[in-house]
Image (cartoon, rainbow, N blue to C red):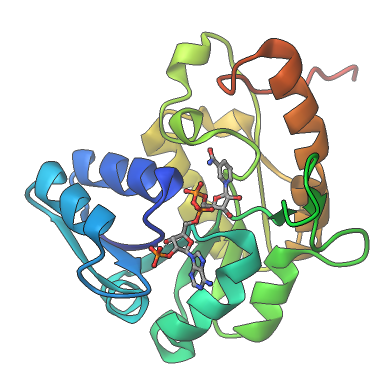
Length: 218
Ligand SMILES: NC(=O)c1ccc[n+]([C@@H]2O[C@H](COP(=O)([O-])OP(=O)(O)OC[C@H]3O[C@@H](n4cnc5c(N)ncnc54)[C@H](OP(=O)(O)O)[C@@H]3O)[C@@H](O)[C@H]2O)c1
């Protein structure tokens, strides 16, 4: 399958790299085609890897991943082009951390809205699935080293899109029964508002390589 990965940061690089490793043609997008990090990534990733603008990557992908800074995601997706997202599964990995007022970061969207919903509203023809935003980049694409089964949350309005995303996650190493569908795209509020707790656990454990697991009582 062809993927477009919007984002040249550690998340974009991790996801795009894993997709190429799994045999998918993958184009990394950034504000400007020829972005230094994207060019270096494509050269290192080898066959199947390419780079371009956000629009180039979105047009290329049958599935598109939003791995841009949360505060800039709507602009990045605007640049990607609604026409290049229409009808496609759009995996939204972004978080809305706002560091502009210092530490700890605030959430720029919270409570009765979320970035996932904003994206779905702005691009009604895209099939938005929020996923992977609750774990660090290395864990997203290789959960195995955690050594235990932990949970990943997905949500979105399109059941078929969630099914497709679950398959991608399974190919990354997530057990399907641990990919927990928490409902429609408004559930992105919870997934995004988990971040303050994630940051506290991170500073307590002094590592980003962790995740949480659900234990059922009945
Ligand atoms: N780091 C993690 O482990 C982790 C874990 C879970 C979720 N997340 C979320 O995943 C997303 C990506 O994180 P990251 O750390 O890889 O990278 P990042 O530094 O948050 O974002 C980098 C990307 O954002 C784009 N960008 C920045 N400002 C922009 C603007 N004004 N307009 C358009 N695009 C802009 C950059 O474009 P250029 O390529 O053109 O520079 C770049 O592609 C974030 O939303 C983050 O919160 C991160």
